Length: 401
Image (cartoon, rainbow, N blue to C red; front, side, top):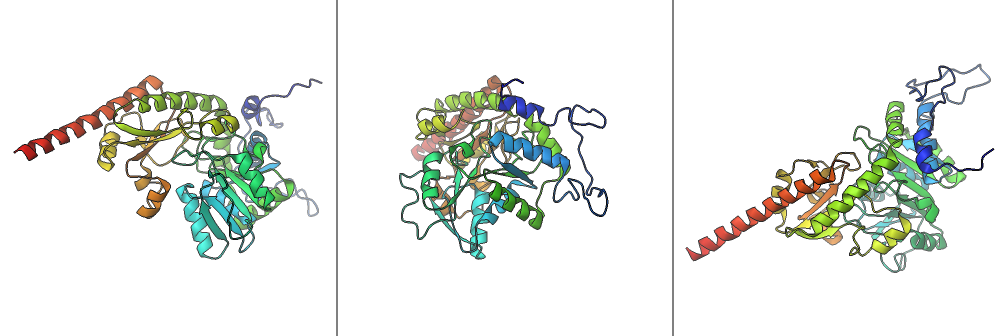
C-alpha cells in the first residue's frame, strides 16, 4: 500500500468518480428521487427521504468537508439558509459578535433575528487590536468574515479564534470570498465554516446554494438535526451542478487570482482611481496577515473612483467585459455598486460608518483574457476622465462668461 496522500486538487476532481456500481458510469448519476424504498418494515436503507439525506447531496457534502478539513458538512438551499442554519447553534438570548462591515445580507439576517429576540448581536471592528474587550457579557458565537465584502478588510483568524475560545465562544467563519482552495479557517482554530456555494464553489453562476462545515461531530449532529427540522437542505440537481463545478475549483481559482492581481495593479496606476482595496497589494493594511493565513489573495477587489456617483455611472456604462450584477465568484467578470445594490438596505449613515461610499465599486474578476479585462477597464476609466474634464471646462467657461 502506498503512503502517498493525494492533494486537495486531485480529491476535488475525483470525488465520486467511477463510484457507480450498477452501470459503471464514470460521473456519478444525479438522484432526483424524493424518497427511497425501505428494504422491509424493520430495515430502512441509508436514505429514505431527500429532505433528510440524498446520495448526490451526500457526495457534495463529503467533498466540501474534505476540502475544508472538517468532520462533515450540510449542504443547504442557499447561502442565506447556510447562515440561518449556523445560527441555530446560538442558544436563546445568547450574544453574537459580528463584524461591523459584514456582508449586507448577513447583517440584515442578524439584525432581524435579534429584533425578534432570538439572540443579541454586537457589531464591532474585528480587525482591531483587542476586538473582544469590553463586551457586555461572554459571547456565544463570534462571526468572522475575512476578507470582508466589499472592502476586503483582513481579520487575524488565529488570534481572534484564540480570544473567542478563551471566552467560551464558538467561532463561525464565512469563507465564501476565498473558498477552501485559498483558505481553510478550520486549520486556524475556527469551529464552523459557512459558504454561499452559489459563488466560487459552483463557479458558473447557475446554481443557488450554501453549506455549513463543522470541525466537531457534536456540532455536526446539531446542524444536521436543524437542517432537517427547518427543511433547508439543498436540492439534488443543484448539488450535482455544484459538485461538477467543484471539480474545476483549483484551476479556476488560480486563473481568477492571476487576473485579479493584474487588474489591481492596473487600477492603482490610473488617474481616475482614488484608492484600490485588494489584499494582494503590499500597500493594503492587511497584506501581511493575509499572506500568512491565505494561500493567495483572491479575486474580489474594490476601488473608489474620483468624482463620486456620476463617475461610477459613466464608468459602468462604458464597460464591455464586466457585467453589472451583485453576485460574485463566477467565471465571468462582474461589477457591482455596493451602495445601491448589496448594501442598499443600509441607512446612509451606516454605510458611511462602514466605509461604503457612493464612489465605491466592486469587481469580481473572472477568468477571461487579462489583456481584454485591463483594456476594458482602462478605456472606461479614460472615458470618466474625459467627461470630468469636459464638465470642468464647461464650468470654467460659464464662470468666465
